[in-house]
Length: 101
Image 1: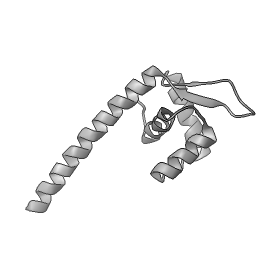
Image 2: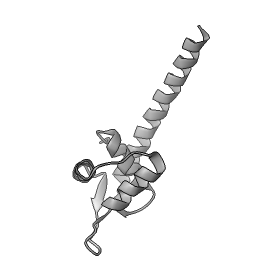
Image 3: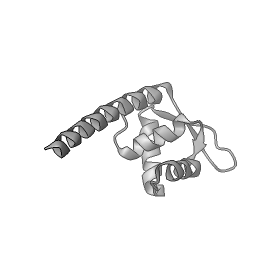
């Protein structure tokens, strides 16, 4: 199962760096990518990813629930990133061709 949204890819990428709770995921994405996920978006994505078996919630720690990437989630992220590289390469080639005209 692949993440359904760009936000899903961002969350999986954040969790590929290690276990994090929701606020830490939001901060990681904002600092590294410059995208701010609102709480509704974040927790909706977390719920869908957990339901799909791509992440798992761990026991709460001091009122914060950490999440971690599952093996299935790592495989899905790897495939999604591979597809994104293909699209990026194609787009770059086509832009070069268009500029050469």
